[in-house]
Amino acid sequence: MMTDGRKILSCIFTYVPIASDVPIASDSRGILSIQIDEIVEGHCLWLLQLFAEKDIVHPPPLVSGYDVMALGYPSGPKVGEILNFIREKQIEGEIKTKEEALEVLKENFKI
Image 1 (cartoon, rainbow, N blue to C red):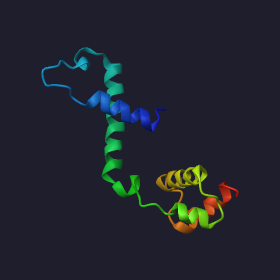
Image 2: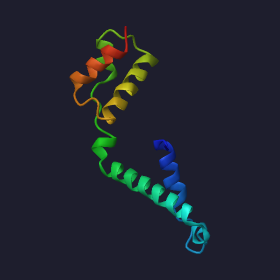
Image 3: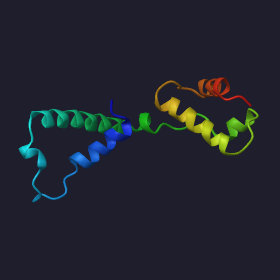
Image 4: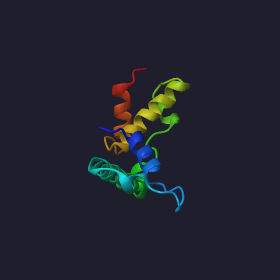
């Protein structure tokens, strides 16, 4: 299974045309390469769909560093780590509200 980062790189390096006069390597490749191209193209389409749904890929943050520190966490790099964790859960759809975010924060990060 290809990671999201590898999907992005495959999409960029496989489907971005360099110039119109450069021959395409896939013109002389076999059926397996064509099947792989179709998979990569599917990943690219999926990626483009995610970018089109900006609110899903880049939703507004549910909590701030001030919210984290108000719960008793000291300022510093740990606050950024907590915010990144919450943001990932939000993007994955596991957290939808500020209350859920604070609950997940308390469950996963002890003071």
